Image (cartoon, rainbow, N blue to C red; front, side):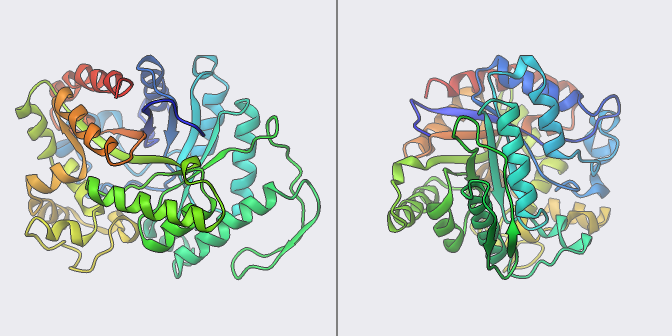
Length: 384
């Protein structure tokens, strides 16, 4: 994909609402359309990354009436099929950010993404990563060597798409193929772009070898982003690919509001601070605090939030300093947020996947008041 300027997409977590399973994702997709987004993405989880023990009216406010069960997460590919059938979303590209490469068999993922590509007439996107422990281990899926499994999963997807419908046999320690057939066609010769969520050195090498875009989640500083992008480019060159063909993207929350006080109140909310549990221990250490799950905790990949009781969750979030929250998301008034994004753009970022963290303000009135500033940020992204 060749980019002509800075682009952005919107991400929805697919929480089931009290009133309709399609209410929240449809509203988010309409916002994406109205603000000029290039794409709309949905997550792939079996349960929330927010501890259910604190997803209560006390901390969610009126939001708990809208989403009474935070772990009631909808299936992403089914929802994308629904959205693809809605004419109003015809311009948006649609994808999963990101498909769990451990829990889902790669042949099924290849089929789902190819189907979406045909339904959308070439606007399908396959975001994929190793997944997280919380969506694998509790459900009986082996969580040893997730990176090795991921590399084989993405290689399998490419092999199936490149098979031309011929029978394919491929050795693999995780996903062997024996006279397998994949006969769905690409749309006008084009398969969905593969966007890889990667942070560690081995995952960056896999990205450079296989991916059309790099979309990290836990990288929290511009300099680290630039270093990671350089590693992806080296891996692409080593694989005989053009580094410029890989889109430099980022998945990150935005917390905005009418003024700085409203923004800091949102950042200081219990639910918003629980998102810091997904940050690696090294990020916490930069702010003089040990991660409550240990000094070596790797971050979101090993977080199992559904097992954290209320008292423990509140003790964890009480340790989160405001400075840490400011590192792991874009924050502030619209102009401040755009200045922060511009700093990342100057380090190579060209495509931002946006999660609206402003919705987690525990005061419904202030969460609603953040809608206008959030829309201003999105419109401003198109001008970067």
